[in-house]
Image (cartoon, rainbow, N blue to C red; front, side, top):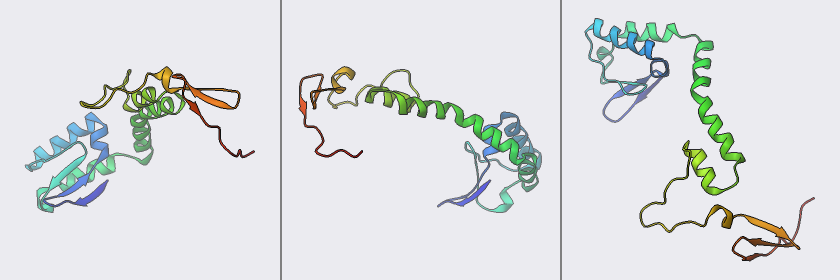
Amino acid sequence: MALAAQRKFNAIYLMSVYGDPARARRFKDGFARAGKRLDIGKSCVRFKSPDDLALDTIAETIADLSVEAFIVMYERSRSPTQKARTAWKTSGTASENRAAKAGASSARKPAIGAKATKSAKASRTTKGNNVEKTASGAKIAPPTSRVR
């Protein structure tokens, strides 16, 4: 739970309502029973004054979720992202990295007006005889000192 003062409203952030559809339904029903207007985003409940809130419903929602249950819900929500990050760290090309980071199965198309990038094979380098060469044949000077 978190509180924030925005420019035109105050907000209370309840991730437990966002992460659990059953809890969200109970939360919305609690506001309806209290006769209060619910202005909610994904996890934020917007209000102008505390009188706009169904405080009993908010208290029940907060008390209903144990720390252990919140941690399980949080870890469950982060697991697909963690897989994408792991794939991003271990893949070989920039386009594969962008695709994994975005969670897509293929690389994004370049923006309108952007020049197309080299193919994945052309951007990789090969080592040989102390000179690195790109797939297009351009030579890259070796580093001047090495740390061992």
